[in-house]
Image: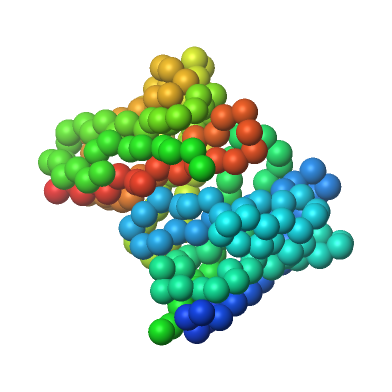
Length: 111
Length: 114
Protein backbone atom coordinates (compact mmCIF):
# COMPACT_ATOMS: atom_id res chain seq x y z
CA UNK A 1 0.00 0.00 0.00
CA UNK A 2 1.07 3.54 -0.69
CA UNK A 3 2.46 5.34 2.33
CA UNK A 4 1.49 8.81 1.18
CA UNK A 5 -1.70 10.84 1.06
CA UNK A 6 -2.42 13.47 -1.56
CA UNK A 7 -5.57 15.44 -2.39
CA UNK A 8 -7.25 13.95 -5.46
CA UNK A 9 -7.07 17.09 -7.55
CA UNK A 10 -5.99 20.70 -7.72
CA UNK A 11 -6.36 23.56 -10.16
CA UNK A 12 -3.80 26.24 -10.84
CA UNK A 13 -3.68 29.29 -13.08
CA UNK A 14 -1.08 29.37 -15.80
CA UNK A 15 1.98 31.37 -14.75
CA UNK A 16 1.26 31.00 -11.06
CA UNK A 17 3.12 28.81 -8.63
CA UNK A 18 1.58 25.40 -8.01
CA UNK A 19 2.06 24.01 -4.51
CA UNK A 20 1.33 20.30 -4.35
CA UNK A 21 1.03 18.84 -0.83
CA UNK A 22 1.81 15.34 0.35
CA UNK A 23 1.48 13.69 3.73
CA UNK A 24 3.79 10.84 4.70
CA UNK A 25 3.44 10.62 8.46
CA UNK A 26 4.81 7.07 8.72
CA UNK A 27 7.99 7.75 6.77
CA UNK A 28 11.08 5.95 8.08
CA UNK A 29 14.43 7.55 8.70
CA UNK A 30 16.05 5.96 5.63
CA UNK A 31 13.19 6.68 3.23
CA UNK A 32 13.34 9.36 0.59
CA UNK A 33 10.45 11.38 -0.78
CA UNK A 34 10.14 11.07 -4.56
CA UNK A 35 7.91 12.96 -6.95
CA UNK A 36 6.94 11.73 -10.38
CA UNK A 37 4.31 12.93 -12.78
CA UNK A 38 2.41 11.20 -15.54
CA UNK A 39 1.02 13.02 -18.49
CA UNK A 40 -1.85 11.23 -20.16
CA UNK A 41 -0.85 8.02 -21.95
CA UNK A 42 2.84 8.40 -21.16
CA UNK A 43 5.23 6.80 -18.73
CA UNK A 44 5.90 8.59 -15.43
CA UNK A 45 8.51 11.33 -15.48
CA UNK A 46 10.92 11.81 -12.60
CA UNK A 47 10.75 15.27 -11.07
CA UNK A 48 12.74 15.44 -7.86
CA UNK A 49 13.54 13.64 -4.64
CA UNK A 50 14.88 14.45 -1.19
CA UNK A 51 15.66 13.02 2.21
CA UNK A 52 15.33 15.88 4.68
CA UNK A 53 16.80 18.97 3.12
CA UNK A 54 14.92 21.12 0.67
CA UNK A 55 15.85 20.43 -2.92
CA UNK A 56 15.61 22.41 -6.14
CA UNK A 57 16.24 21.52 -9.75
CA UNK A 58 15.28 22.90 -13.13
CA UNK A 59 11.79 21.47 -12.87
CA UNK A 60 10.67 22.10 -9.30
CA UNK A 61 11.45 22.64 -5.65
CA UNK A 62 10.78 20.17 -2.87
CA UNK A 63 10.12 21.42 0.62
CA UNK A 64 10.19 18.79 3.37
CA UNK A 65 9.02 19.67 6.87
CA UNK A 66 11.46 19.33 9.71
CA UNK A 67 9.65 16.30 11.12
CA UNK A 68 9.56 14.82 7.59
CA UNK A 69 5.89 13.95 7.91
CA UNK A 70 4.86 16.06 4.96
CA UNK A 71 6.28 17.78 1.92
CA UNK A 72 5.32 20.21 -0.81
CA UNK A 73 6.29 20.13 -4.44
CA UNK A 74 6.47 23.59 -5.94
CA UNK A 75 6.22 24.32 -9.64
CA UNK A 76 7.27 27.96 -9.66
CA UNK A 77 5.57 29.04 -12.88
CA UNK A 78 2.99 26.49 -13.98
CA UNK A 79 2.34 26.04 -17.68
CA UNK A 80 -0.39 24.17 -19.51
CA UNK A 81 2.10 21.36 -20.14
CA UNK A 82 2.35 20.79 -16.39
CA UNK A 83 -1.17 19.37 -16.39
CA UNK A 84 -0.65 15.78 -15.22
CA UNK A 85 -1.14 13.33 -12.39
CA UNK A 86 1.52 13.90 -9.75
CA UNK A 87 2.68 11.08 -7.53
CA UNK A 88 4.39 11.52 -4.18
CA UNK A 89 6.17 8.31 -3.16
CA UNK A 90 8.35 7.36 -0.22
CA UNK A 91 11.04 4.79 -0.85
CA UNK A 92 14.20 3.47 0.65
CA UNK A 93 17.49 4.49 -0.89
CA UNK A 94 18.76 2.56 -3.88
CA UNK A 95 17.83 2.12 -7.51
CA UNK A 96 16.76 -1.45 -6.88
CA UNK A 97 14.07 -0.48 -4.41
CA UNK A 98 10.59 -0.62 -5.87
CA UNK A 99 8.25 2.34 -6.16
CA UNK A 100 4.70 1.89 -4.88
CA UNK A 101 2.30 4.25 -6.57
CA UNK A 102 -0.77 5.62 -4.84
CA UNK A 103 -3.62 7.34 -6.60
CA UNK A 104 -1.70 10.57 -7.07
CA UNK A 105 -3.11 14.04 -7.56
CA UNK A 106 -4.43 15.45 -10.81
CA UNK A 107 -3.11 18.95 -11.38
CA UNK A 108 -4.94 20.97 -13.98
CA UNK A 109 -3.31 24.18 -15.13
CA UNK A 110 -5.87 26.56 -16.55
CA UNK A 111 -5.18 29.33 -19.07
CA UNK B 1 17.80 12.22 -16.89
CA UNK B 2 18.47 8.74 -18.15
CA UNK B 3 16.54 7.37 -21.11
CA UNK B 4 14.48 4.21 -21.11
CA UNK B 5 12.80 2.96 -24.26
CA UNK B 6 10.07 0.43 -24.87
CA UNK B 7 9.12 -1.47 -27.98
CA UNK B 8 6.56 -1.68 -29.36
CA UNK B 9 4.62 1.39 -28.30
CA UNK B 10 1.34 -0.21 -29.33
CA UNK B 11 0.39 -3.77 -30.15
CA UNK B 12 -2.85 -5.45 -31.12
CA UNK B 13 -3.02 -9.22 -30.98
CA UNK B 14 -5.54 -12.00 -31.14
CA UNK B 15 -6.66 -13.85 -28.04
CA UNK B 16 -4.46 -16.83 -27.31
CA UNK B 17 -1.31 -15.46 -28.86
CA UNK B 18 1.82 -14.28 -27.06
CA UNK B 19 3.25 -10.79 -27.09
CA UNK B 20 6.77 -9.69 -26.21
CA UNK B 21 7.55 -6.20 -24.94
CA UNK B 22 11.12 -4.94 -24.74
CA UNK B 23 12.48 -2.43 -22.25
CA UNK B 24 15.92 -0.92 -22.81
CA UNK B 25 18.05 1.47 -20.82
CA UNK B 26 19.78 3.52 -23.50
CA UNK B 27 22.52 5.39 -21.69
CA UNK B 28 23.06 3.52 -18.47
CA UNK B 29 23.30 0.00 -17.17
CA UNK B 30 20.29 -1.15 -15.21
CA UNK B 31 20.89 -3.89 -12.71
CA UNK B 32 17.20 -3.82 -11.85
CA UNK B 33 14.15 -3.19 -13.99
CA UNK B 34 10.54 -3.09 -12.96
CA UNK B 35 7.37 -3.90 -14.85
CA UNK B 36 4.10 -2.13 -14.13
CA UNK B 37 0.60 -2.41 -15.50
CA UNK B 38 -1.93 0.40 -15.61
CA UNK B 39 -5.62 0.03 -16.36
CA UNK B 40 -7.69 3.03 -17.47
CA UNK B 41 -8.14 5.69 -14.80
CA UNK B 42 -6.10 3.68 -12.31
CA UNK B 43 -2.64 4.03 -10.88
CA UNK B 44 0.41 1.99 -11.80
CA UNK B 45 0.52 -1.47 -10.28
CA UNK B 46 3.89 -3.15 -9.89
CA UNK B 47 3.92 -6.57 -11.51
CA UNK B 48 7.47 -7.75 -11.01
CA UNK B 49 11.07 -6.86 -10.32
CA UNK B 50 13.58 -8.02 -12.90
CA UNK B 51 17.20 -8.52 -11.86
CA UNK B 52 19.94 -9.04 -14.42
CA UNK B 53 21.03 -12.64 -14.54
CA UNK B 54 18.51 -13.97 -12.06
CA UNK B 55 14.86 -14.86 -11.84
CA UNK B 56 12.28 -12.13 -11.57
CA UNK B 57 10.40 -11.47 -8.36
CA UNK B 58 6.66 -11.27 -8.91
CA UNK B 59 4.16 -9.33 -6.84
CA UNK B 60 1.34 -11.17 -5.15
CA UNK B 61 -1.39 -12.12 -7.57
CA UNK B 62 0.75 -11.88 -10.71
CA UNK B 63 1.08 -15.19 -12.55
CA UNK B 64 4.73 -15.83 -13.30
CA UNK B 65 3.91 -18.41 -15.96
CA UNK B 66 1.70 -15.98 -17.80
CA UNK B 67 3.97 -12.95 -17.60
CA UNK B 68 7.44 -14.19 -18.47
CA UNK B 69 10.29 -11.83 -17.68
CA UNK B 70 13.82 -12.14 -18.96
CA UNK B 71 16.62 -9.75 -18.00
CA UNK B 72 19.45 -11.11 -20.08
CA UNK B 73 21.69 -8.05 -20.06
CA UNK B 74 22.25 -4.85 -18.15
CA UNK B 75 20.35 -2.87 -20.75
CA UNK B 76 17.47 -5.12 -21.78
CA UNK B 77 14.51 -6.72 -20.04
CA UNK B 78 11.61 -8.37 -21.83
CA UNK B 79 8.06 -9.09 -20.73
CA UNK B 80 6.17 -11.76 -22.60
CA UNK B 81 2.43 -11.99 -22.12
CA UNK B 82 1.62 -15.59 -22.92
CA UNK B 83 -1.76 -16.76 -24.16
CA UNK B 84 -3.09 -13.24 -24.00
CA UNK B 85 -6.76 -12.64 -23.28
CA UNK B 86 -8.86 -9.49 -23.57
CA UNK B 87 -8.52 -8.87 -19.83
CA UNK B 88 -4.75 -8.54 -20.33
CA UNK B 89 -5.37 -5.43 -22.40
CA UNK B 90 -3.60 -2.67 -20.53
CA UNK B 91 -0.79 -0.13 -20.53
CA UNK B 92 2.49 -1.84 -19.65
CA UNK B 93 5.32 0.35 -18.38
CA UNK B 94 8.85 -0.51 -17.40
CA UNK B 95 11.32 1.37 -15.27
CA UNK B 96 15.03 0.97 -14.82
CA UNK B 97 17.32 1.70 -11.91
CA UNK B 98 21.06 1.62 -11.93
CA UNK B 99 23.47 2.25 -9.15
CA UNK B 100 21.92 5.58 -8.32
CA UNK B 101 18.79 6.41 -6.38
CA UNK B 102 16.42 7.23 -9.19
CA UNK B 103 14.29 5.04 -11.42
CA UNK B 104 13.46 6.18 -14.90
CA UNK B 105 10.41 5.05 -16.79
CA UNK B 106 9.83 4.00 -20.34
CA UNK B 107 7.08 5.54 -22.48
CA UNK B 108 4.82 2.52 -22.07
CA UNK B 109 3.32 -0.11 -24.35
CA UNK B 110 -0.39 -0.22 -24.98
CA UNK B 111 -1.62 -3.76 -25.49
CA UNK B 112 -5.01 -4.55 -26.97
CA UNK B 113 -6.08 -8.16 -27.09
CA UNK B 114 -9.00 -8.89 -29.38
